[in-house]
Length: 485
Image (cartoon, rainbow, N blue to C red; front, side, top):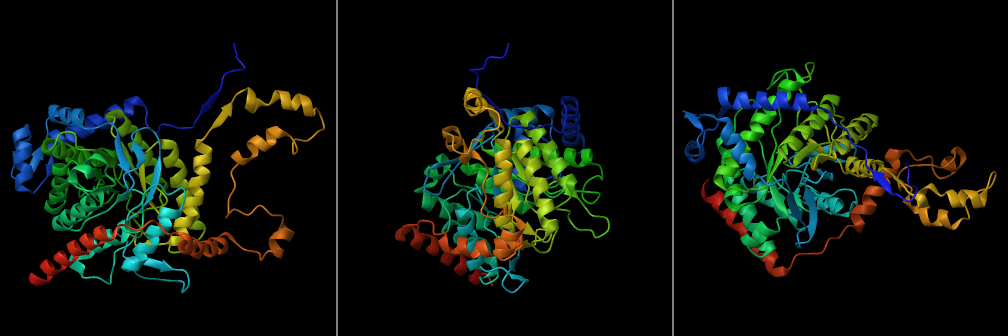
């Protein structure tokens, strides 16, 4: 029986893998971990893993099934991230999808000069303000590598420029263990202490295993820094099918999962309960160019499949979307970004990065960032589904208006038309009106919009005493680096 008083609204979603496929890939990863193992060239990590029951053979570590299971048992199924001022922002692991940017691209695309150039600290500050302003960018990374600061401390400057110009959660990469220690110290200064930062983390860092099946010494060191302090770790292997992992998609998934699980185990034996987000950038090596195919449909396919795997483990997912191999904002950039954003939204990945990046992840584009914000808005509207109730079926209004009438002046229309998707960028004029208003293309409208956002975006500043402490940490790092020369 259909009961007209019921209200039903179901968001669309899909699964890439069925239960049998998930089980097969899970078992393949367990076999890899137990028989092949992972290279972990770090003395302290080897000691921790050996004490926990792993088999150590030089720097090769093999993990018994029970160790995988015990580590997963202590890994939180949800991870909360906060704003810089301690307000709840993201709840990862709830099927909600949150979109953010990419970090360490050395170049920025300058639309005024139509060319790319090396990124500066000010570019990172500007991009951070734009991310903070855009309504559909839920979190972000420092977009760019500053070329105008001393190289040994560039990660501190990168973090500094980003954290001063945003409130939204920040995922930031460190180039060295020392850099990460300083970044954690800066974050703790802002939070009011390390304990406060642990309780309301607004900052996490990616940990990048090296495919196939290796976690480098510096990477392990950074993982230990975060795990010892109980701060969020984002697992981010970047396997290339046919290059660093088998050419098959299933083989790519199994290796990436093994790398994630090995890092997860190390984090949990270091500090049980360490918040973890599993994922990465799973794509293929283009056999014609040798490049990392950021816009390939296989990336979207494998990321959706990985979301099924992380749901199996009940651990939040780190996804990839909104990136392109295009060199400028053009139809290729739009096609590749849209494909990955929509499929990732449907997959239910938790923390999704890489929007606003073009040129094989080498170049930051504020134009692409603003375009992706629009694509995400459309994807979010789609994910809102269809609400079915007496109010939305509107049979009483239809009966009142009757055949041949219109609904423009009805109160029901006034109540609901604002729910319809509207955009400042999408053109819906007729042809003559479009010509009369300048015949602007989407690229024209985006490029006009970017400087408006840059001028309008002004997040609240940090207190003066906090600013002084952050600058002192950077100055100390610069002096230490200079003394080592």
